[in-house]
View 1: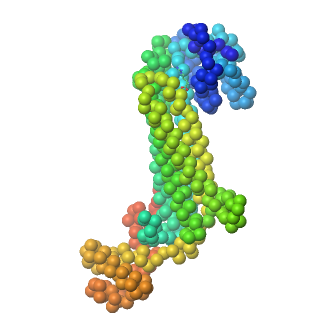
View 2 (view 1 turned 120 degrees about the horizontal axis):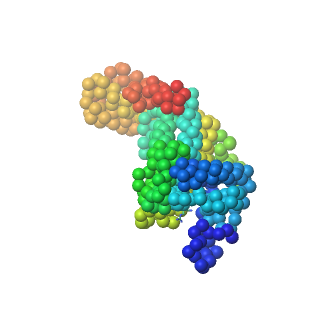
View 3 (view 1 turned 30 degrees about the vertical axis):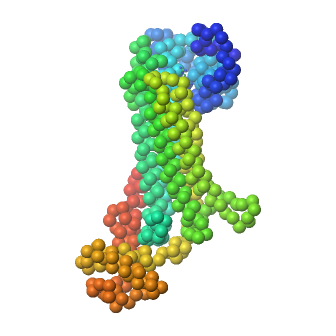
Length: 460
Ligand code: ARG
């Protein structure tokens, strides 16, 4: 096995099980590239202060390029002593350019500021890919909302029929959650974009390394203002995992809507074959497995977040090995989100809707509020009209008919302000378009939402 980076003061051997237990290479090799560009910037910074020569810096840079090429070609060979990505890259660099030069790279640096830097670079750069797929999902919602703006359906509270709404309004309600998720993600990626490198192990860098230069080289907006904070702050991990959890909650709730609407009892939507599976026993079955997995995976991401928070909370100041537990939940959440967002987009874009089923599920009693509002427009206080409309609901129920079947005399018996135009209340489309205050389900206010999201997506 290779000589341990920290082996000088040790005489005894590491227990083989401990060796494995301690190692993070099986997962942190994922940010090999961030580790290499971080080292290249650091080599430049060392040369700028005359800690190493320009020639040495160039050698380090070229050597690191070779190591990078091996990773990219999938030819990097791990060795037994490769504890983590930092030790693996440095070991290989030494083999390629000689340890008398590679051994200068780590001057003033610690794996503590190194790993914090690498991980921030990775989350920042990969995080922006999640912004892209999230925007694709929102775009799919906007396209549907635009194409199907004529479709009306029952809106629910407590899963009980409440008021008629546009199908597009429902789709957009989810799109607005995703829009907020997108903003949150961009904001947290901006917040995490500060440089730990130059913090050393904990106390700071003794070689006057130009941290502003390092920040610029590595695309960080600012340097972290305290070295203890620099090596131990993992708030960005917590924020990312919370973002992932909340986004999955939104995905899960969307999935739940569609699962309900795709039942035989509702029949409002039909999932494309591409996102459904069958039953090994019941030939007629078409199951919404994609949606159930989306709903289920939200639990997994939330678990990663709570697991990390538990590990983070007990750590005393600065770096502790507990912090190595920050990576797997982030990678897992990342992969889960990347998959889930794309599947959600596919499901949404290929879904068949059945407007006739939605229409058939509308019932006249869903216009009881409109009846109350009718009387409000005739000058009756809403509290009274609510009661009167309730009486009309009960009257229709007792007669086993709908309110639309009640006569003008029936209505007049409830209140003298009713006139013949009460018949106009029984119009779902009009009920919907009455709700034209911004944010409402009317055609113009749904159209306005579409425009606003298009602008956000840069499509307007
Ligand atoms: N593999 C470690 C991690 O992921 C790198 C930092 C190790 N630093 C240390 N002093 N043991 O956190």
